[in-house]
Image (cartoon, rainbow, N blue to C red; front, top):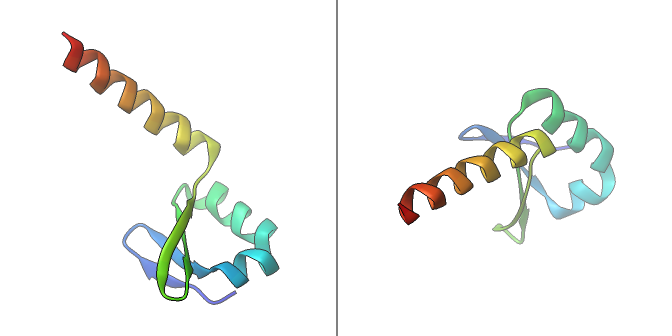
Length: 69
């Protein structure tokens, strides 16, 4: 799997995702950092752990509650 460091995560190609899905998932779970999936040198998707996703959802919900008063 070819990886380049990208901010707080890694960049992988969509081809690498198809070939190495379980390794990518394990990397995301272990590092708690996202993996950015690129297709033809353009960002296509982000893979992140369920734990990190839940944290993001909690933050979004807190901001929404604050905005509503």
